[in-house]
Length: 305
Picture 1 (cartoon, rainbow, N blue to C red):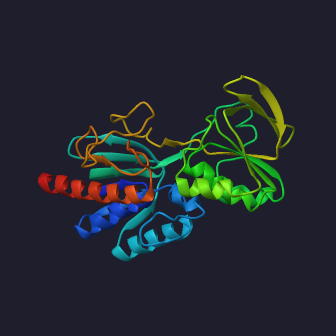
Picture 2 (tube, rainbow, N blue to C red):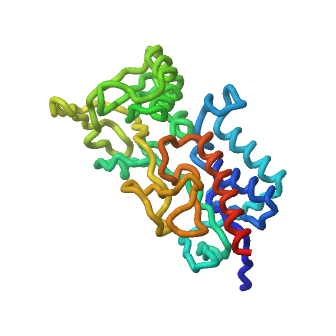
Picture 3 (cartoon, one colour):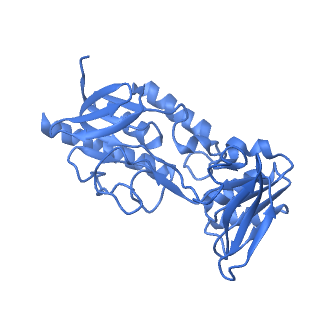
């Protein structure tokens, strides 16, 4: 099999990856975007987005469709591939995927992240049997039932708001005594009559027979433990980067370290979006990082030539 050398390969077809692809095409680069999932980016699972400029309110799925339409119109080539490893071979980078190898002069890693797990007993056992990480995906299965949302940030509060119009009762379990979400979301969630807060508390175990039936809660201040009957547990406690496929400098949580040009510790390899160490993981920052990464990669390839 003949391996074609590309100017640039982008691993990941979410907002950062597609933006990088659009910029790369405009610079005349031979570029392909490798994406393993039919659902591109975490943003596709977001119910409503109200902080992306130009759209007062839009669903994550619709916004992702617009990204795709723009990329297709621009001529970005999207190819299905589950990338397993990225290797540095000096003046070329080798991308090893389940369906073959790819080569490029430069690579942009835009692999995103996935929901962080609690790591408690029962979490894995009851996955898709009452345990979920996506209210948009699984909320309708809990119509008229009682559910718990674990977390206190923007994502957790948004999940609770979505579920409040489906479930009969929503409990927000948070290990602190106040939310970390923005003031607008806090105002909305406090106004919901069927949302109740359980402060200073963590879930220690998820219990049931075939499906989730109850949880074991622990108050982190008093250490008192109580069992609570519940039908569903929605976990929203942060994200874990998908960065195991590349050996570059990362922080303790696994997010890739870059400079302001999105350059990693390996020359010719860049990172953008949720897989990168940053102070804010949002669509608006991901697209900006994708643009910067593409411009940096273009300059790198030009110097090589």
